Image 1 (cartoon, chains in turn green, brown):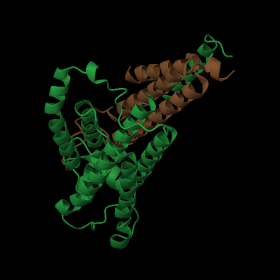
Image 2 (cartoon, each protein chain N blue to C red; image 1 turned 90 degrees about the vertical axis):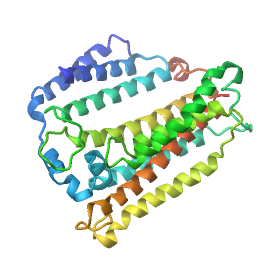
Image 3 (spheres, each protein chain N blue to C red; image 1 turned 180 degrees about the horizontal axis):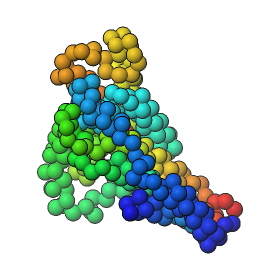
Image 4 (spheres, rainbow over the protein chains, first blue to last red; image 1 turned 180 degrees about the vertical axis):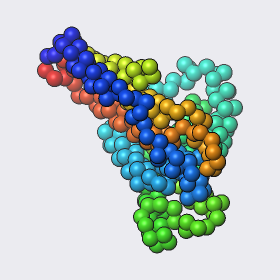
Length: 230
Length: 106
């Protein structure tokens, strides 16, 4: 059993490793890629938001594997959270007598606003700060507010998983169309010379799919935790 | 100065991993390490100052979008992996009756 004070030398070694690596911190950073993305990012992808341009066009393979990890993690959480006894709703955790009426009323007012804001963030992912992941998280928050409003709510987890798998297959197949039109894998399928507005169709479609996937995945994780906490 | 702060966050997380007595605290320490790494990357991308990376190619200085695109990936993966670890800890509690490392590794 390692004592706590024994960790001090280890932490010192790690600190000096970091300190040596970061002595030339100002010169460590090379801005060639930043200049490239700033110059050509909008022209190549049609996305004003360069972060969206990177994770939906230049580095789409990253996003695909990330969505895969999300799918695997959600499935794993639900598989581990499997339990024998049947519960109709998570009433045992959200006790109605402990939730103030004021909170429920305010949640009813806030719910559509949060939902609308999430959809706005997803749709404007290529023009403004935001995108599929951020908007999906906001949408998941909106869906979780529903559990405070309607305590008798039942959710079919299997349906959520089916939708999520279909969305993942859709994501992969949409990003593979580019092999037919452009001749290269995993990028925008609309030809490089076409209108910038036309190119953003691809970005909106992928942002929508990723937003739905993240929202459903986080909701499924939350429901699994609710059902596990018996 | 700022990289030292994020290294401090990373070191606190590592100390937490070593010294924590329950599974939950270990999971949170790992999350702290992840936060430190995110801070380090974002700071490295924003060294030259500049505005948010929303630009149509005109000459204005923006921060580097690459670390931000990588870190949004890290945040999503980190949250899902944390949830996986937490649900595993719940299962461990159901099986062993405790989440202390001492009781589990006996």
